[in-house]
Amino acid sequence: MHWRVLPSLASIFLVCVSSSFAVELSSINVEDGWKLTIETRDVAIYSRPHTDSRLKEFRAIGPIDAPTYAVHAVIDDFENYPKFMPYTTECRLIKRDGDSIVGYQRLSPKICADRDYTLRVWKNSWPAPEGLVFVSHWTPANELGPPEKKGVVRVKVCEGGWLLEPDGAIKTRATYSVYTDSVGIPSFIANRASQTGISRLFAALRKQVKDPKYALRAGL
Image (cartoon, rainbow, N blue to C red; front, side, top):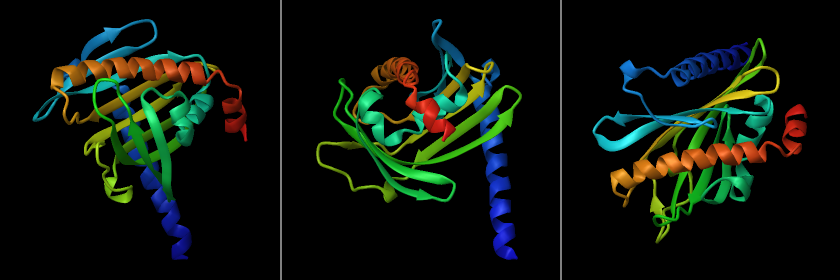
């Protein structure tokens, strides 16, 4: 009896947490400190100061000409990130753990030494009038990944998420949020690099989602 009830309660809890996170992600309020930093036809990037840090928290919103399930399939293609995601040189799935996954990533930005981290990512979805809404969010889980490597900077702070909302039957309104540390990089350089990296991230998604395998994978 208990084994039937507990998974249901866990699912309800996950839906509530994910829905609250989605609502928080979808809001850009100047009263919360958000300021428009860059706006193009492809993406609008907002930033706000982070408590006790010169580094900024970023949130970006942009349209993608593909349904949410296909965009989600690209984001979910974690182990193939080195083939299409900016700066990514290594990705490894550590484990699947209930409603989350744990994965390791190593990045090679041009402006600094390589850096790596292990993240735990929670994912959820639910139906909306025009399609499925997908939400994911992540926090550091370095203790579950490989040990630190010589010559590679270990990132200790990396929090963020994706919100994919249908904008009609074949378009997606994508919201990306991130806050991370920048060990060894001056804050003003790190903040500018984050803006560039986010723009490249959206461009990579738009290019990769054109591959029909993602629509097929989502259908399967």
